[in-house]
Every structure is written in structure tokens, then in C-alpha cells.
Image (tube, rainbow, N blue to C red; front, side, top):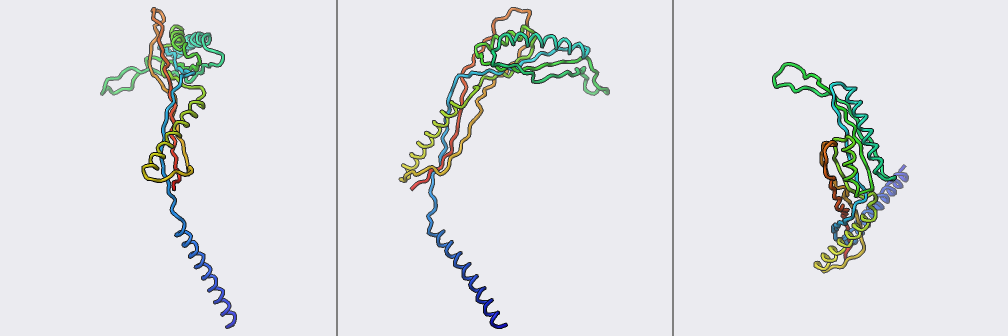
Length: 245
């Protein structure tokens, strides 16, 4: 029994010594390893481009004292609007119905009147979205839709169908700006830049919406609707951390 006890004590002592030695070695390595030195910068850049895609929302809204009459008139006018637009858009363009609603209209109730408002009619609304690459024809599309019966036009957007190329250009410029900032900081501190330790990017939306509302005046002579697409911008932010010596 005494010999077994001695062996157990020796084994336990060896385990404790091993653990203490490992902890001491790790601490020594930690104290010897130098603290990592870095410089972090943020580069931002923006690239402008001419839009090649227009997104236009429009609607036909009709009212009547009867729900069926409002819906029937709306269907007839919406069909004319769709037909007019299809003759003007390209093969790669599209028209999509985004919303249809048939809702009651209520009379106005004076404050304090102890009664619920009464239904006085119905409103039917058919909303469509047009996506076209014919940027120069947007004004013509609006005029054609109004003349065919549309009486709501809004949410005009000019954007890019593919933003990869301008995005890469913006990222390249942001990277150059980040490098220039890091070099300036390193020069001011009297240190030298080493390799990139980490880099992260963020980009912003490129769509630039322009909202407007219009009521149709199909029976009146109107000048063509002028639409200027201008340019859209693609911006990028690059956050870079450099090791220094």
C-alpha cells in the first residue's frame, strides 16, 4: 500500500510539473513575440457612367359608383396602355403588372357625427412597370401611355443593367486612394509599409430615382415630355489594414 501511494504521488507531481512548464513556456513565447503593428485606412471613390436602363412605373386608375363598372373601364384602358407601350419597347425590354386593387371609396364624415362612413363608389387601379433600354424614348413612352389612358406616372429610375465594369473601376480607385493614405501616414510616422493584413469593401446603390405624378390629358394637345437621363454614379469604399515595420 505504501509503495502504490508513493507511485501515485510521483505521477501527480510529474503532471503538475508538466502543466506548469507548458504554462511557463507559453508565457515566455508570448512575452518574446512582438506586438503586431498596423496602419488602417479607408479609401473612397466614385465613378460616373451613362445609364442604359430606365425603369418606369405607371398606373390606370378608374372610379365608378359600381365596382364592376370601375373594373371594366380599368381593364379596357389598361389593355390600350399595354398595347401602346408594346409597340415602342425593344425585344429585351419588358412590361410587368406590379399591383392590382379594387377598393371602396367612402364619403367624408364630419367630426363628431355618430355614424360610419358610407360607400359612395369604387376605385380600380392597375399598376405596371416598364423596363426599357431605349433611354432616349422614355418621354415618348410616357406620352404614349397617357394618351392611351394611363393617369398615374411615377418612380422613374435610371440605372445600369450591368454595373460590374464601373464597380471594378471604383474599387481600383478606392484601393489607390487607400494606398496613398497609408503611405502618407507611414511617411509622417517614419515607418515602412509591409503587406496588406486585411481588406474589406462596401458599395452603394446606383439607382437614382426621380419621382413625379401626372394626370392624363389625352384629349388636349400637349408638348412632348422632356426627359434627361443624366448620369448615374457607382461608389465604393475599401477599408485596408497594412502591416508596418
